[in-house]
Length: 131
Length: 131
Length: 131
View: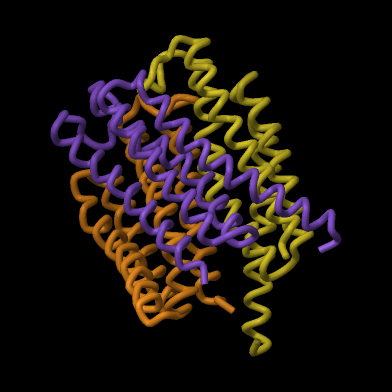
């Protein structure tokens, strides 16, 4: 049960873990020693990519699973794949030039919004029908 | 099943997402360009409100759902509403004057603590009764 | 059901909450007033311990529960206890000397990796067997 949503969850977490690995590598490359998280503009981009993904992961994962539970496992997994793809575009753009990060951001935010709104509508309809 | 807890979860996530939107707007208003997160004291307040809410969201959501699962869906949703209200008070106070953030903080921490302790007691009782 | 995983979840959240309490105390001790998170090297260590634990908590908790659901409640709880122990070692080492944090980090990362890979293998096997 929920096999597709579970596998997309693991893929999203692996992608997110890779961003933490990027930060660890960037500490060496740009000479930013722990516990500092500032001091080099390029390091700060890589760090903000990880942090922003964390900020959205906590929105994405609950919505993904509520959608899987109330609406559809396969639909949740498909929207989850779009979310990961949006986060990947965001990372590539942010590291190259922070002002170009908008498109990837919008892709992932849209996927999360569809998961959230889809779940809300489904539950409201169920309650309205006396379920 | 768990309709009330699910709806409160979505409300909490929408509130949390609105804090990220506040940070994005504050970047423009206070001239703090990404990836920087420092440089203007008022921007930093708005950023810390988002971060502190993130720090607590990862405590709140698991406790909310464990309470819903083991104790009560409606009880979890009611405590979840208190948590959101506490976070709202915290935000208003922090942005106005950081040293006044204590009351809202205590309200949300208490709601989270009741969810956590209630779940723990329920599980320990079940185990003690050989469930 | 899932009693052991639920109790380990609450233990992990209590440990994580204690790190936020350490940050609040360190604000007073090292004179770092909110909303600032920099300005004293020792405060920054304590803050980074909390943040890094947050960064990993969002990987750990979903993997813990997927492992509990698909593989084993008791196995998940045991690996969860190892994760908490690794995070404790990480905290002690980081506060004493940031460059010694590697061992605790590896312990907790290994526990999280076993949870993630174990879940992935279990699901792939189930799908391969037409479950």
